[in-house]
Structures are given as C-alpha cells and as structure tokens.
Image (cartoon, rainbow, N blue to C red; front, top):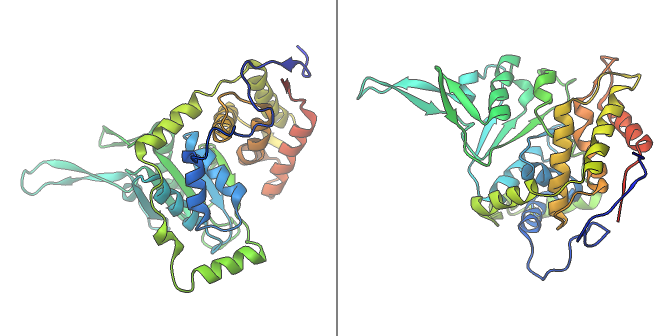
Length: 333
C-alpha cells in the first residue's frame, strides 16, 4: 500500500479543515478559548493545545521558567469549564498521602474513614511537580493512568472528567528532580509557554494594574456539556491510512541514531486521541493527516529518551521534525 494513496472521505466537508459556518453561536471550545485568552495574552496556539488535551482526556505538562503564567493558564481553564479544581503546591517534604488522601479515625464511631486528598477534583493543578520527591511524583501515576486511588487496600474512583495540569521548572534549576520516564509517558503533551511578546506583556501589565483578570472568568460550559464535547471528540472517525500515518511517525523516532528509546505505543495512542480532539475543535467528525501533523510536535518529543543524557528538549523536537519531514502523509479528498 503506497504512502501516497489518496483517501476518500464521504461527507468530509471543508477540505481546509476549518469549522463550517453553521451559525453565529460559538461552540463550547470557542467559548473556553476566549475565556482563557482573557487571562493569558498572546498564547493562542498554547491555549488551543491545552484545550485539545483536555478534550482528549489526557494530561498536560507545562514547563518553563517561573512567572510566565503556567499556573494562571491552568486556573483559567478550570474556571472556564466550571469543574472542581484543586491545587497541589509540590515541595520536597510533600508526602504521597498529601495528594491521594488517607484513612483517619472517626472519634465518634471509632471507625476508619477515608479523607480524600486534593487529587479528587475535575482539574488538579500539580504546581512545580518536579520539586516533589520521586516517591511523591509516583503517587500521581495510578491517578493519571487508572483514574482511581487505592488507600489501605480500598479503591476510590476519581471524578470525571479528570485532568492533571502539571507545571515544572527547568530541571537545571535549584531544588528540582527530573521526572522519571514512566511519569513523563503519562502526559499527553508537553508545552513551553515562553515569554510574551512586547504588546502582550504590556497588555498584561495594563490589565492587572487595577484588577485580576482571572477573577472575572466565569464558567462558559457545564460539566455535562464539557463531557459531551469529550464524547464527540472520542467519536471522531479515523481512516485506517491516517491511523497508520500516526504509527509510522512514532516508528520513525525509534530508528533515529540519536534516540535510545523512541515514542512508545502509548504515545501513538495519545497522538491519535489528541488529533481527534483537534479535529473536533475545528468542527469535523473525521480525522485528517493535518490533525496528526499539528499535534505531533507537542505529543511525541517528551516520550523520547536520547542517547546523550545532556540532550535538550529541542533535540527531541528536532527528531520529531525529521520524522514529519520524511514520513509521507496520505492525501484526503
């Protein structure tokens, strides 16, 4: 089967991939994007990518220097979707039970009663996750992978939707621990916000002289409506050739000479799920190779383990860029 085979899609709609003009009423995704953009200026692509991960039922890792708005971004999303939100400030003395909760003795009944930890929320902000010890970082693993917590042999199911938005400082900063590979693999996407441009930074300064924009963000959708959007993203149709295109991209990273461990099969699954959510945000119910191309630079690089232990994240991104350049995508018509 040729890489250049043309794929037909019945009712594919606008080949540009943009949402059709079905009316002036903004979609739930558009309302959420606008609400978050009122707090975070000049970061449209980053906001769209985080929203894509949320719709794809993934988790997102935001890495950058302090003060560029990582926590504000996460809080703005929590406010916009109208779900419950809890924040965990990760520190070296944070214990696993501080995240998951613990069994406590009820003085009235003499029985042990489970006291839920901050992980029992729709959106959990794990602030500066790499300042927590490796043991505490690992406490999030079952939560992120299984959507549940086990304490004293009893399993407690987490609410849905359940999304972890973790922030971390660059690993060369004082007091940080590198996330283990198994933990990084649980994040669907990794983003760097970067410094805002001059106009966006000036707009931020002006807006916050007399008010806090985050205080003005109100829920623009309900939990039920947001869950419905997640269901629609999950139901996006994917042609076999587009799925195989995602598989070939992941496999291309495994054969690179600079890579010790390439993108895992879990990374391939996450890429397809994120691409489906991207298609849904553009108003389509079918998956395009362009959706896969758009998400690959955010989904695949942090899954790679380079031969050089001192390799930078940009080196992993370069590997993914090379995989995109040499892997021929199917043509949709």
